[in-house]
Length: 190
Image (cartoon, rainbow, N blue to C red):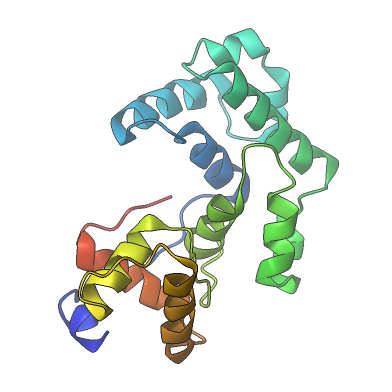
């Protein structure tokens, strides 16, 4: 880990956007290229004017689809907005909630799974001790940097990653971020 950190000076993890915007952007970007996601996001942001849950709910589904969103993604983004408007998701409470409590709250929203919730914890809330075991980049980086490229996709491989990551606590998010840098020096922002 020390070698990876030394090889990537002057880069740091930074929070981006508010909770709703970060989660909406993650839904827009699911299963499409980065370039396509940026184009759809640009049209979506322009359509809504302000990136607020109420603004999204005021838009018709057909208007949102015209931005390039699939029917399913329109459904997901409207469900996300509904969770924020109703208070079922309240970012003001996040500071007093554990990572697992926030994950449970977020995966209740259609279109948001554990991986997305963990990326939210890392990139929006800057939670220091998240270990996203379902992240293919993390698994690949651990394999290459610690296990000579051996496959880590099995249950045993997952257990090895958990055991290795115990030494990174309480900074597993930081370790994960640097392991991602070992694969791609340009930080991804969510």
